[in-house]
Length: 207
Image (cartoon, rainbow, N blue to C red):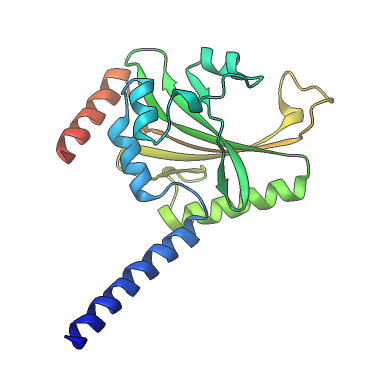
């Protein structure tokens, strides 16, 4: 009996250790389980997607200054942010407003005023993405396949490069992490119906 108990404890320690290592490496980026859950929700309506992601309509930040502009493009900011690398990123639930309509991914972003801090955060994200997903989808890009259907893109922007830049803005740099249904495969841009068919086939296969 004692031998069995020790064997079970050892197995549990291995599982917990593996989970801890993955969490440390990811640094707050979406886990494999979260990505698979997201893929099972692609092209569902907003309410279904929010519920599947662990949110509800009440979690949408409809009082934010950018809500009207974002929501008109099918993007919905959430009240709760997500910690990545020790910094809170704003969460945006993205939906397509053209056929096929529905949930297509999650975008996270953080704003910085200090250049060194922004670039350090970007470099850390790139290192994590490379460790988790290997080589980018295409050489020289900052895009990776994070799941069977999901592409991860990391983007870094300088506010002064924006066409509508205003010196009064309280930030100078923006760092974005976007998980989105893949729309370009082997260099070919897929139509909406082709993307939806890939999603349907994968979702059916997993049932």
